[in-house]
Length: 136
Image (cartoon, rainbow, N blue to C red; front, top):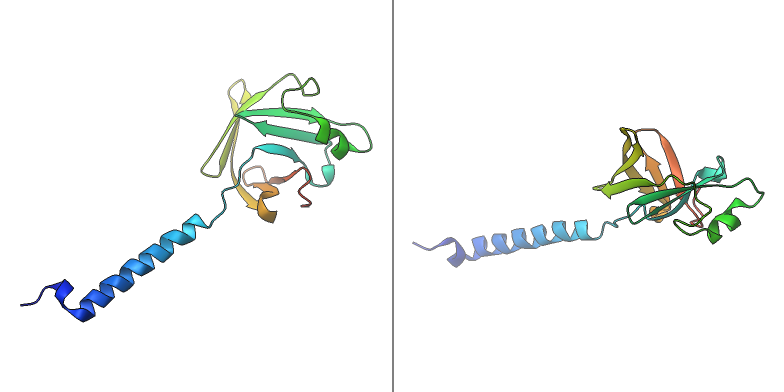
């Protein structure tokens, strides 16, 4: 009686199955992992607000001038241009959680478009555009 590995047909089937499993797992590795880290504005800068997500803190900035993007490019996380309130956040498994203080939280799944330049907030139903990404 021959074993499974001694049978050439079974040996080929096992090799094909192993190759297919390797191909399926390599597809997952090609999926880009996007992050919320960076500078984000509303589409067309409609609310003149920018958020910087950096190292677990969300900073908020406002602009009242005519060229907000140029101004926003000069701001750095935590500088004196930010509002005094800094909000803690986490981004794990495509879910953003922002502690809005006093027991309030923003918890939303995020989907990305435009090579990570557009973040779609599923639960509240709005989007943010990464500053200088060219996405709208």
